[in-house]
Length: 304
Image (cartoon, rainbow, N blue to C red):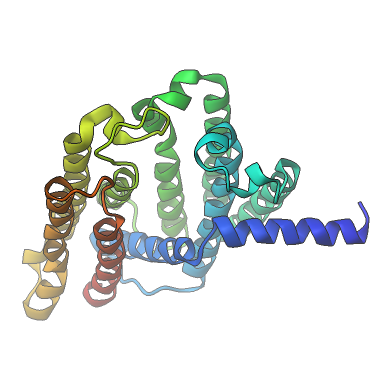
């Protein structure tokens, strides 16, 4: 490949990133790592302040999210040709080969940076990257996984759990978090927060056989209630682990703040069921996630 061709390929990949990896993905990734590490430190009894280890973990997670975005672009190609014809891989704005080379470079950078943190960090991030490839293989080899959204969820969601485990194991190895069941139970908070958003973006009153929607499997009301229940689970898990009642005065107020977010998803459900709008609004789901993570970061800084 000539120098000109290399530069052209880099521009194409950067164009893909600009289109498919918007700044809000990075904002989410940063808030997620800080909230997860801080909450795990809080419930495990460690004093927490973000440091260089936290920064490296955050950068690694951002690279992994980009890596997984590239995996999704390739494994969803046939679906996107029908439902998202403007995607870069569909239009030819980037090639599969260019994405695969980028994935190799990202994987090497993630493992190398994690190895600087600890051997356990490198092992967990390698497991996360490998799981992404297994998802691709599962969807390619199984029509059930490709076409049945609940089966697809069971197969694909654990990649976030493995990435969560990476952050926790790495933080334990580098001393920001203590090991224990409460540390790993924090995964429930982030599972609930993520799943309420995941369901919100794939819920509609109209049955769309060509689209992978949770409402196709659960019905509009069932999928809508699942969104509100996942969000409520996230708050309930946080309160059960943090135990706001054990603090005094101002710290206790901070620890109770997540409960103020519970009405947000239920208001979104009410709006969805009571108005003519066909799609579940993403605004309540986005507000819930971002504000919850910001509050969790605040609690970790104030209460540890």
